[in-house]
Image 1 (spheres, rainbow, N blue to C red):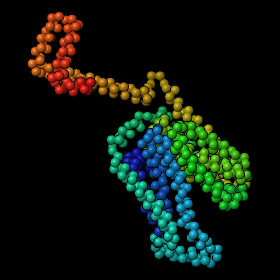
Image 2: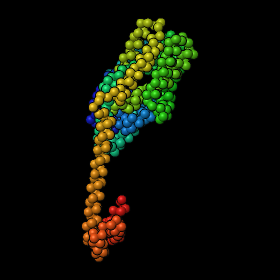
Image 3: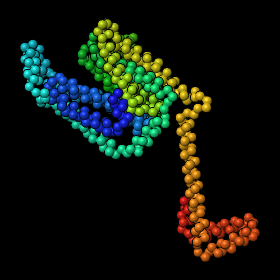
Length: 459
């Protein structure tokens, strides 16, 4: 919510650069935290930064490319998926050796470690971590984020205020009749879509081990294939977005999600079906969110507040639905509540999108009589602008003609012959004489005056 307000009054590059700078500070200080309070503060910094990035990144892509930015939007969200896929691998490399050595089972040793840690936390708020691999993991990611923030600050220095004003005026010119209704429906759409995505990615490991009876190594592979196909298909969506419309991609994603979640519910005990349907489900969920943002931009302009509105819907779905499903799964352990959630969400989004499409295209075919649309006004304003430009060109031509005649009167002795010819034309007003006079006067003036030669070149 705060990001939507800030992006309406502060430069996008500046705000994103400040956000990433705060993230860099948090990444550098997190390994040194020795109290839970400091760790909560650092996690809050990350949460604020992610909120600004979710809003500002989408708004920035739409601000730069508008309704032609579908491939760029897919590339932006592919970077999210790629980072989410690579960061756990980096964390595993950092925690791999230390976790195995600290996996002790003696209760006396655990009590000694707890007492030692409590004494260490009481002495100081910050301390160097014992595991240096953990420190280098956070430091490397923090350095990468710092470099990106420097580039954003450089773009802020290069960005001109005139371009920002032109972009704002262009966005205000295109506004759908049912602007807020579309945003509310998109809010609900992203609420269920993101909620189902995070729910399945979070609980598929537990579901596979408890309900299907898989080993932990197999369940971990199932979780990896979900996020792996998710990231891979977001990368492929960059290519598909160049020749497929965002609405078409949303329909294809809805069909894949609905089909795969239906098979998951029907064959919930089959490990083979779980592997295949999970990979298809992850691939189908990949391009929905960026395609939804690119789709809504085709019908109405998206400002910072508008983007923050449906991003809040996605964040609420990410927070509320996994918590609710976790409680329900605990009360009904024999039912595949996680799979029912995916099927219900896919069904709801598949029904909701045609309603959104109908509402978005309704003003194009059902406009009241006597009322001009925004596009017609834009066309009229552009035609008036062209008329003004033509009038200004005609005035310039008249000024040049007046200058030509003044130059003729002040030119060399050849004006005497031109006057004599003029007299003859007045006495004998025939077409042949008038043509002879015009051609002679033109060549005499053009050969003697450089200004007229310049005018001929312009014509």
